[in-house]
Length: 164
Image 1 (tube, rainbow, N blue to C red):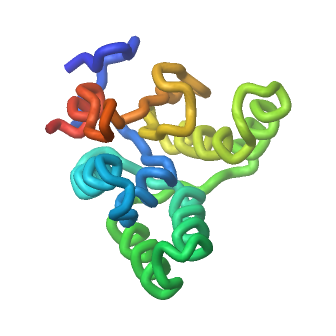
Image 2 (cartoon, one colour):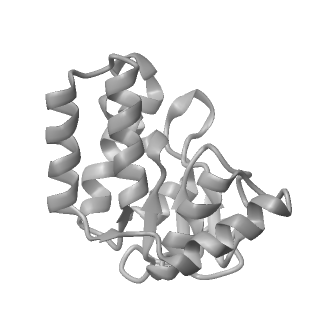
């Protein structure tokens, strides 16, 4: 199936993808409205598809929800540990750090976003679901997609990727 706006054909069965930290946070933030509901739909679905989480996203999740008091630290750590068990995980290499540094210096994206994308690219991901980067662009061979439609529901492209 072709995802609208993409220049490549991706199916749920063939597309490796990753989730940015914001989706992990929304999954536990019941105050996030439609984004919470969408993230709560995305994550379990992604677990059965070609989704790889980066250790960076899981670590950032723990830092955000525990520092902002969204969850007690022990619960945040348990959730992070669950995701480590459920999803294949990718860690940033020295090469990914070099790529992220170059992208950050060139002003293409922040260092941490660049590292997440470079790590995902090394893990074979072709798509990242995030609202933090420019929707519809490609960075390092990874298509950037904001999965949230107006009102917080899922976009058609996200539904296609997740085979919903």
